[in-house]
Image (tube, rainbow, N blue to C red; front, side, top):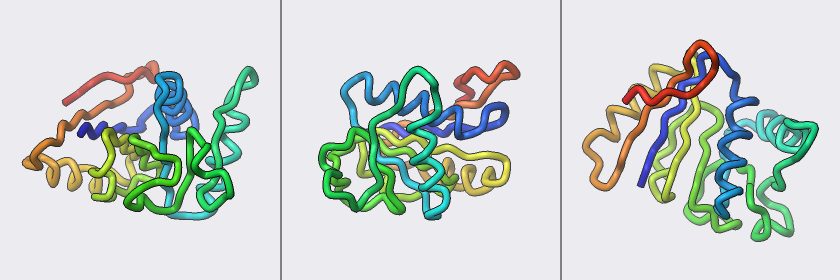
Length: 148
């Protein structure tokens, strides 16, 4: 399984997450987006409808009647088996959750406020069998560069 750490230094989550979500959906994948606070989940819900004037990302909040049909599902926790069958997980609130290791790929977004926790998660995954870690940071133009 692959864990990609995304250090948000130039662009906020609101600009970075939709791009990753688009790529997952374009390749036929499904995504579970996790944020612990209900207010952040509501903001993410709105964001995926409005982030681009030309398009939107089809999604729903977990607990709805059509969760299994949603390419992107927003939830408060990672859980064992997302209702939409996602193999990809985006941890949008900067909090690492070991449940993410049950997915094929995890996107862990964090900013300066969560850097200590991200470093601890990075170190904690160093010797985990079957885990490939990548650390991405933004250059001054906001483009992602692989740093580790």
